[in-house]
Image (cartoon, rainbow, N blue to C red; front, side, top):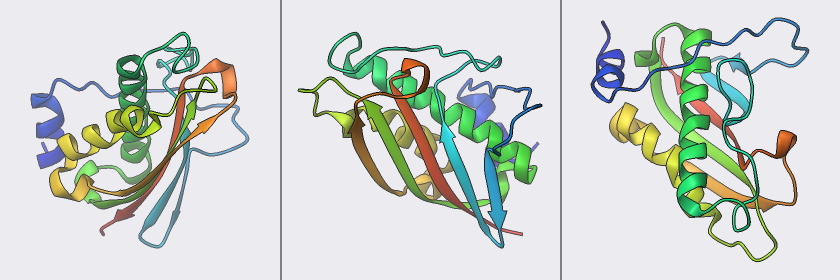
Length: 155
C-alpha cells in the first residue's frame, strides 16, 4: 500500500466510487504534469447532494466546513481515478471554493478550510496551496459549496 493510501486509511477516510457514464464534461484534464480538476460538489456516490442550502441562512460555518471537506474527498477520488496512486501528487497548487452565501454571509474562507485542512491531512506540506474563496448567489442543486483545483503530478 502507498504512503498516502496508508495515511488515508489511518484517518478513516473512505473515498467514494462514482459512476461517470453519460457525462459530457470530464472531472479532470491532465496536461503534462498538471491536473486541472473541475468543480466538485458535496455529493454522495450516486451524485446526490449530501448538503444543501445557503451559508448564513440554512447552514452554519461548521456545516459548510464539512461540505467543503466532502468536496475534497470527492476530488481525491477523482485524482486517484485519473492518475492511479495519490502518491503521484507532487503538490496541490491552487484551489477555488465558491460558497452559496446569504447576502450578509462573509465567512467563505472559514468554509473553505474544510477542503484545505483535508488536503494537508492527506498530503502533509504538499497539500498546502494557494486558494481563493468567494460567495455566490446560487450553485447547482442548491449545494453550499463547489471546489475546483489544480494539482501538480509527478511521473
